[in-house]
Image: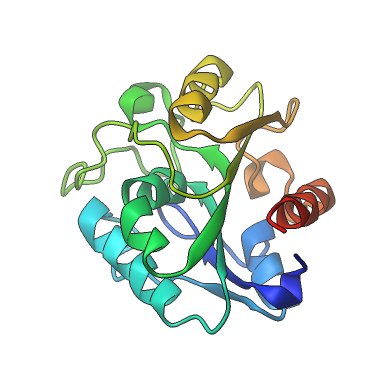
Length: 194
């Protein structure tokens, strides 16, 4: 498949993705891409986030491929059964935020996890097998998810795991505004969907 043959649903994580983040660049540059807008980026609720992702997927006019980053990854996996019924045919999952080990996370935008209102249901990582193909991309030096944990998550989710090398959290802080390698991998993922 090509990008023109799918609706690309961008799912940022906690605190959203800034204007220079690769997700924002993809949203601007890929004609069929649009961002899921959450009601509260700073105090995520797992059910509300999943419902919002499903609502956006339900408004698509073509098959949907989800592109999630950070806390958006477990949000997508938790909501996977809802998403399957809304036309999602694949998930490109990047740098998951492993909430079970959040005590080791660095500050994010000057904030610590969990937010003041609590975990919002993001207290454990989902362990359900995904009902559609998925690729999980994780760096081997990501402070938000150890690679050994990513291996376990990929196995549980039935996702293909890709080692992104020493790429950190694959965000602006790790030097990934444009992420050309990610775009190439996304293109290969789309081809694998048919």
